[in-house]
Image 1 (cartoon, helix red, strand yellow):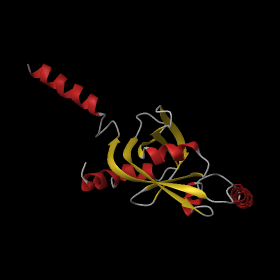
Image 2: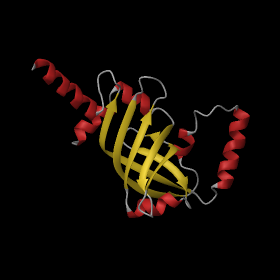
Image 3: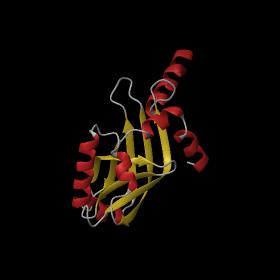
Image 4: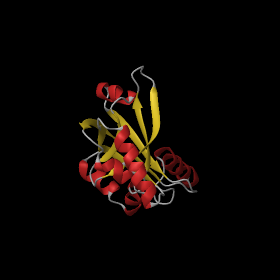
Amino acid sequence: MQPNEITEVLNRPLSQELLARDMTRLAYVAKDGTPRNIPIIFAWNGSEIVVCTPKNAPKLQALSENPMVALTIDTEVHPPKILLIRGRAELDYVDGIPDEYLQSTSTYEMTPEQRVEWEKEIRSLYHDGMVRIVVTPTWAKLIDFETTLPSPVEELIRQRAERQRA
């Protein structure tokens, strides 16, 4: 997929709505060679998806050995709206709490007092920093079940139309 095609998909209004959500599913290959798919909070910075994790997270060694990932951001209503993204993860070890982590948790319902206490706890827990997992999309597909469908369904519709013409 060409960069301009990826940009076109990610700039669609529905894609932008999905990229404004706070939860994605990150799929990667674990150290033992089996697949993993985990829910994780994320932030979209306009060109990359950033997820943050503790420095001792098992996924870090797996991602350093095989950085290829897939992400799914979707809705819980019918018909679902689904943004599928593939890319390569880069690991960025940082001191302190990354801005993206605080940004991605900003939608959590908390009073200002609860937020202050929560951030204090987070800063204490991650006192030696975190790791930013930065994913630059290399492929993207938006499925809304109105104007776009999964590829196999599109193929079945095409085959049905050919049968009806015959």
